[in-house]
Structures are given as structure tokens and as C-alpha cells.
Image (cartoon, rainbow, N blue to C red):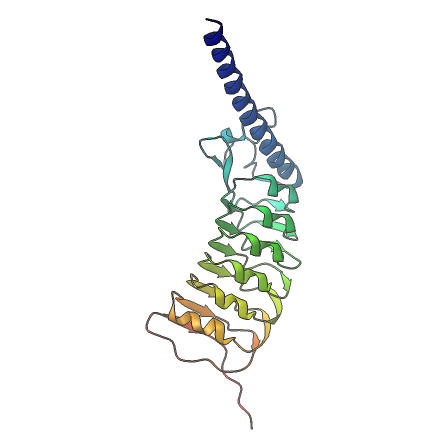
Length: 250
């Protein structure tokens, strides 16, 4: 009897520890999200349900959790929110989708977001973000969609983005990016859309990127930059290649 009783107590204790760990995780993620709420202005009160008194952020609107009550999605596109992104968002360890497009977010993209190792989609397009694209984003091997278009981002395109070998959409158009297009982007054989138009990029289009035309690339858009050089004709699997007219010499 004593052995069975000890085993029962041990099982109850382990179950309690697991429940406590889940609760602590929920509270930690809830704290992070609440800190982000405080940093934002929310004129439409879309974050009204983000109540720190509730133990589980999975009950909040615009939040999706997995079966372990860990946050995997934040969906706040076109929500009219404004303000910065806080680096503590990197503490949402199981986050897969960060959908914050079409708002008035300002400030820079936190370097710490590169720690979101399960992230599939980072959609920050059509905001007011400034600063450089963090090279740390190149460490998110799970990333399939990186859409940062329609902001005020400047500086070079980080060569480390070429490490994103699962990426399908890289959309950096309509910013103020400068410098050369990194040849390392040619490593991303999964790319379907590569949109770099409407920046201040210079130099020529690397042959490594042109080689993607033999893979899955559907659209390559480098128009409205300061590029020179030439390009080859599209292959049969490519529907659109958009570039500026070639410069001519007199």
C-alpha cells in the first residue's frame, strides 16, 4: 500500500508541476503582450480584452494558442494601432505568425526578433517603421514569409537573409534601402516572390539571383532603383520580371 500511495503522490506532484509550468508560461507570455499593449496607442480599442488580470492570454482577442496554451499567433493587421515594437516579443518562444501589417507602427524592428525560432510569417508591411533590417532575422530558419514593404526602412539588405532557405516571399519594396543586392539571396531556392522595387539599390542584379529563375521564382521585381547591368530572358516558369530600362551609352 505504501508503494502505491507513494506512486500516486508522485504522479499528482508531477501533474501539479506541469500545470504550474503551463501557468507560468501563460503568465510570462501574457506579461509580454500586456507590455506591448501599454507601448501602443489603440484608438479602436481592439486590445480591450488584453487584461493582465486574466491568467491565460489564450482567451484574448487576436491571440491564438496551441494545445499547450502557448501563443502561436498574433493577428492585428489593419487594427489602427501605433507605437513601437518591444524587444520582449522575442520571449514568445512558440510564436509562428506575427501579423501586424497595415498599422502605424514606428521605430525600428527589434534585433531580438531573430530569436523567434519557430516563426513562419513576419508581416510588418505598410507601417511607419524606420532603421535597418536586422541581420538577426537571417537566423529564423523556419521563416517562409518576410514582408516588410511600405515602410521607411533604410540601409543595406542584410546578406544573412540568404540563410533563410525555407523562404517563399521576400517583399522589401517601397522603402529606402540602398547598397548592392546581396548575391546570397540566390541561396534561397524556395523563393516564389522577390520584390525589391521602389528602393535606392545600386549595382547589378547578381547572377546567383538570376539563377533562381530556373527554380520556383514567379516574380522578380527590381524596378525603380538605381541598378545597372543586364538581365536574361525569363524562363517558362517565371511569369514576371520587372526592372528599369537598361541604361544606354552615347
